Each structure stands twice: as structure tokens, then as C-alpha cells.
Amino acid sequence: MGAFRIDEADRPHLVRLLVIWIVLSAIGVLAVLQIHYPPYDQTVQGQDQSRTLALLTALATPVFIAVVMMVLYSAVFFRRTTPELVDGPPMLGNTPVQIAWVAISAIVVLFLAVVGIATLASSNVAHAVGQPGRAIGQAGGQTGSGTPGGAGSEMQVQVIAQQWYFTYRYADYGGVETTHLYLPVDRPVELHITSIDIIHSFWAYQLGVKADANPGVDNIFHVTPQKTGSFQVRCAELCGLWHGNMADSEGQVVSQSAFDIWIAQQQKDFEVISKAVPSYAPYYFPEPLIKGG
Ligand SMILES: [Cu+2]
Image (cartoon, rainbow, N blue to C red; front, side):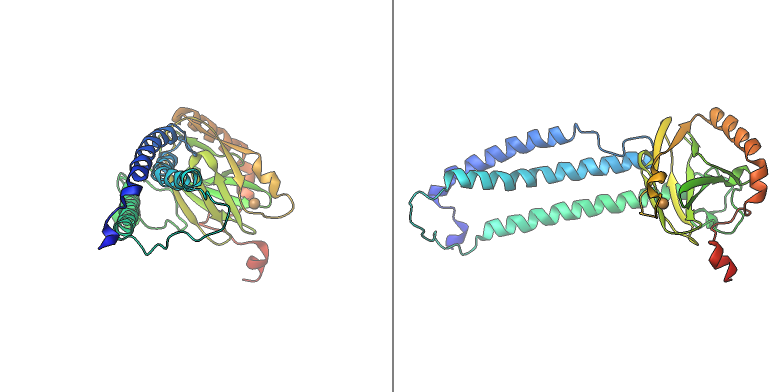
């Protein structure tokens, strides 16, 4: 079986390529791991996303280097030397190479599948436990019963999109509706994202949250801020003439005591308005749908 043999003449090339590839890959992987990947580490979930991005980039780097290296190496060392156009020697497959690339690809894909499944499983567990006062049957379920809040430690915040701004309702604080998103640090938050008119997308970049905001839908996201500071909020779905107006908003992660002061002030400021807006519900419908029943 000639296919298993490597041509003596190719051996120096192979050794050289292997050495170059190992050296460049080591440098490349170390370099890409130095990069700070978005959405950074303001929330536990954002940090997970950054780590996943770093892992995928680190795995892709040796592959990228192999491809570019082969192209450049071939262009230099296997360059056509004669002016006339002639076919090269026919290639009829190479069993070791084929086995190697199928096996390596399978290992990389299976490894990522295991990482992905483990990540999904652990974040589900994290949300189902650590909620004293909430019955187990309720823990993983949708809290769309119209009676939010309760004794769970996860704070519920409803994000309401509309043309052309976001407002926020704090279910645990009498359903007060405010124009800014403040979150206390180190406290798990359950975001309920919805819309009262058309389709929007709530994108809180540094929180690692990007979620569809659809009328009549209660879209739930879990987020745990771990660093104080501001974060950007914008709409990521073209939603009409003033869509751009939904890009200049900023939220804040603050200490629990600062949050308590802020929310008390909001309850005072928006007391009158809160009486005028519809009572807190898991989601709302736009006017025509309400009128149409
Ligand atoms: Cu929008």
C-alpha cells in the first residue's frame, strides 16, 4: 500500500511544516488568549460568554494557521518553475491524512459539544437552586401567572419595549415603572422582556443579554451582575423611524444600598404615573389587539 508511505522527497517539507505549525500555533494561541473578549465580566453570564469566545478562538487559531501556512508554503516551495503549463502528478488520496483530519475534526467537535452541554446544564442548575422560599415546582417554570415577586431571591425586572424607548417595571417593588434600568450588584435578576407595540430587541451589551422583545410574549433571561458600573442599552431590531433613539440609553449596576435608595425615589417619583399605567402583567398587547379582543 503505497498510500501509507510518505515519499522520501516530501519528508523534509513535512518536518519543516510541522515545526513551523507547532511554533506558530503556540504563539498564536497564547496571543489570542491575551485578548479581552466582549461582553467582558460585568455579569456572571457575560463572563461565561467571554470565556466561550476565548475558547472558540483558541481552538480555531491552529486551524487558521495551518491553512494560511500551507497556502504560503506552497506558493514559495511548490511554485511552478517552467514557463509551460503542465499538469502535476495525479493525487489519488492519502489514507493517513484522511484518517487524521476526520479524527481531529471529530475530536474538536465532540469536545465542544461536551463543553456546550455542560455549560447549559450548569446554568440551568444554577437557576433552579438557591431560591429559598420558592417551591421546587415553580423554580424552573415561567412566572407568568400575573403574580410576580414573591419570596424568591431572584429579583424580577420587566423590560418593556415600545416605539421608541425602553421602560422597566420592578415587580418586587409594587410594579413601579421607571425609565432607567438599575440593578443591584451580586443579586440574581430574572429579566422579563416584552413589547407593547411591535418587535424590538433588548440588547444590554455588557450584561451579555440580547433578547427579542415581542408583544404578547414574556421572554425570560437570567443575569447576575458581579461588577458595579454602567452598561449600554440599545434596541437591536429596526423598529421604525426613531429606532436610533433607542441606542442612547445607559443602565447602572450599583450596590444594594444605593439601589434601595434609588428604587424608593422611583416609587415616589412615578407614584402618580404608576396609577395610570396598566397593572402589572406578564405581557401586554398593543391597542388594536386590545380593542379587537
Ligand atoms: Cu426598537
